[in-house]
Length: 124
Image 1: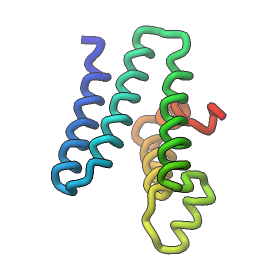
Image 2: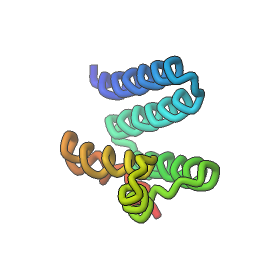
Image 3: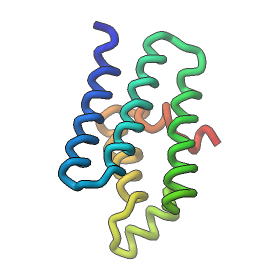
Image 4: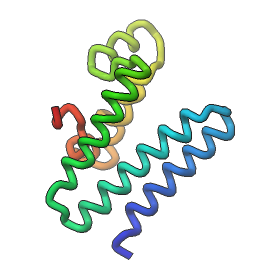
């Protein structure tokens, strides 16, 4: 019963991943949301187990994803500069979505733990 939260989070993200993959016919959605769901589920699981380095592992997973995949491979600017650039140019890109979810709506719904626990900029 105490492992319900990680299982539910993984199930939600996998449902989103499969739905977007099948409706948009783009494998990116399957890989993206599966990775995020697995990272969140692992983080919650390790936190429940009181693992000493749970936060560091989650930060590493998020940081690697944002630096390697989004930064180097996809060439997305996920920092605050990218957010303002895309916002004022009228384009709704990844940085806008990231800041809306991770910095505004996530903390409103889940408290500071949403970004404060896994924030990859805190890792750097």
